[in-house]
View 1 (cartoon, rainbow, N blue to C red):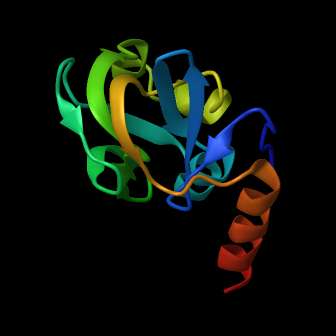
View 2 (cartoon, helix red, strand yellow):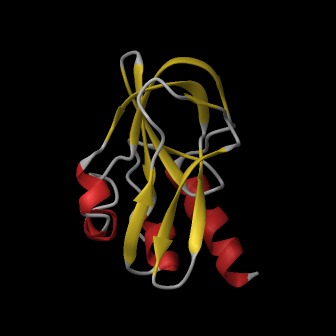
View 3 (cartoon, helix red, strand yellow):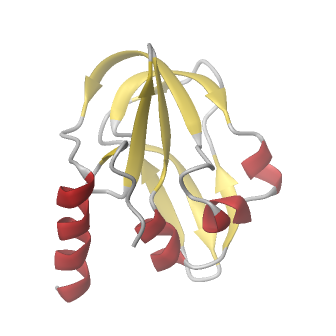
Length: 127
């Protein structure tokens, strides 16, 4: 399992990368491998508000439709439009295929380190 140490993670399998005042959010390698081949991504619109712990959109795979949960509260300032036509990019490179960028962060879930996230995934897999 690939978990870059430069990122933070949510227990709902999203990664977070802060770049100054902007926060990038994407799906983890564990999430994309559990979901299988992604065929559709539904993302919020620019200027939409996202709330920590609540669904910001969803992904559809050959197996199921799964919600994507926002690890932060704030305003969407950019979406990765390339994913709308090519959701498989998440499968190919989950840490390059960010979903949305969020600004004006007011709240965030408890984010965990790469090591803590790996342990969380192992406990879910063994559960």
